[in-house]
Length: 386
Image (cartoon, rainbow, N blue to C red):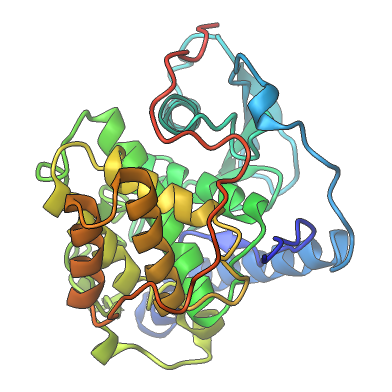
């Protein structure tokens, strides 16, 4: 059995990949280049600080066993950094308080709540750590800061530069994406490098998209399957940061360049940039999930989402897991949840085959024991309203 090392820490998780910032620095105006370079400098600083503050080998405190919890309560706190780069900033909205009229504040509050509700009401998970972690967001970070990130403790959102990017709270799936990094990190596996890192990024795109689809009450066939729709400014030739339906088609712009994501293993990108292409090659498992969800139909957070959530919590998901092993784990999760040879089993197998990852069960033969607290059906208890 592979035990997940709960003290493992990943890199800083930013929604805007480094190759986009590099493209802006090469092709943008002087003001755009300055904003991109400043954003890159801030991101690199936080990566270094994160490594120093939690070195390898330092264990995190134990958590409450999820199965012992009868109720769950969301606790959100939104801070206004007021254009500065220091935390925490001014507390402007707490759990249960009404809208402030500040779009970034209210979007962050709603996005945190929508993510929490998906995890609790659909998967029975009490916040991103399954122990009721309080959700803190800090908005209006820095000047013309073109990014949003999860640093292991908090969500941070820039306002964008207004020319290339709008405020980073505008897309609810971006909020769900970044918080989902916390969930993946809490489960322990998927180091942020090469195929494992691409799976890490894909997990966040999957659950970020599910947050948006559930908030909009969309079935899989009605969803746009875009990540970050609305984030690109009106002058940009593009519609989002990524497309799970058609990787490589999200944007094609003189300043941003062309979306480099592949949707099939024949186009897999081998690079040292971006931690071995974690934001690039995530297009392959992204499309696999899209194919599963649309083939099964209905709400994607139900059957397809449960399969991916079970796979994330499977003890055979190694820190250096590649696409082929993850595909096998999703296939076994589908069989365990819904029966071998059923529509779900077939959908998973077909989806991975369509993206160039043939899948079998042969190399993962260990008996599956579901992690404590996982529920295969929606719990009846809804989150109490404050």
